[in-house]
Length: 333
Image (cartoon, rainbow, N blue to C red; front, side, top):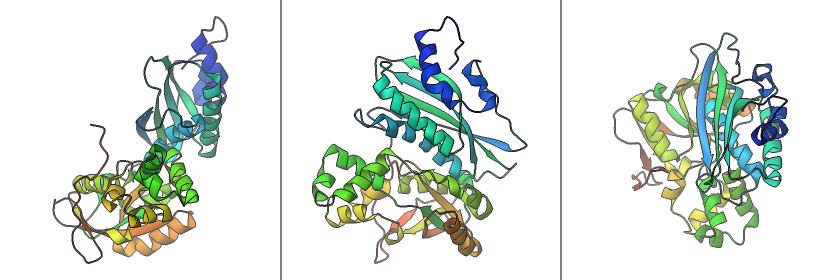
């Protein structure tokens, strides 16, 4: 993503018009060089990358501003779960055409989020594609040296916590697709709108990053489904888990959808796109963790305990019996 001031190509003009105003960090060199400089400032640099693809992560008729926010925020969610503060990002954008009606609101929303989260554009690339629109972002964050919270840090006896609510985004997509969830919640338009908003615009828990560094043993963001991502954390930590399904936080819309038999609880636990934080905390630290999270403005719920062994995590119903999960997470393949 480079452009000079003379002999500009159409790509150069596109970058200069839409994305140069977003490159506010001095290390981006106003997008006139082939690379950027990100100052470490004595911290460790955390790197994460995620792409959002038309028809997979967003629908073709989704508003471009929501597409931009989702593209950046899914990466900010990863940084937050590592205890990292945002430092900047690079963008690779593949479009069928340079359409001002799409690019204008896309760039404005991306710039607004970059400013709000302190994560400026550092560079990238633009391409033309005959296929699906693709937005790939690599984001950089900072943590004090050696302080990144890894998914392999969970310990037997740790309490398992999750932020926000689970299943909203997966059901929001089902509402947009007009299936059983849409029909079941047709008398609850506000709930439907809230679910759709959660699908289109994630809420990365950036404010929780420092709290995680001080209190969590292990953490990761929930992107492919709570059950599946918990299994990943447990496998990395060499433990298992027992989860009380009734303690998993659900929004009113999701509760109504489950109660009205529009969707099984399994689909809620395995649905993707939550972008909440899953973490494990020592029992002695739980009270302080909850208080610190509350002070940061982030709701957290204790849902279970890490246990010894290597079996997949067990989800228990209200009677204490295991819930059979035939699917634990979303998978691209």
